[in-house]
Length: 95
Image: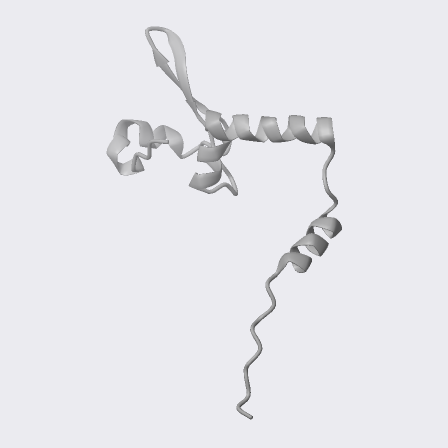
């Protein structure tokens, strides 16, 4: 995802002040080429992942697997993780 400081796009910046009310559509040769939309309560990483084709493919593969094979309940995951934790080494006491 490319990040551009708002100050560097000053002709566009004035239009972006009202994004909460409506998106801004960028036009080239009479055709819409991009839309700038408000991202309330969203951080840059979440926005990037939401449009990343590799991440979206991973999520879809995971969903197909759950539909096909089912999922493990969170209680079972916790139980298995607790059982696989290595026990802390005992302190040896001098005799």
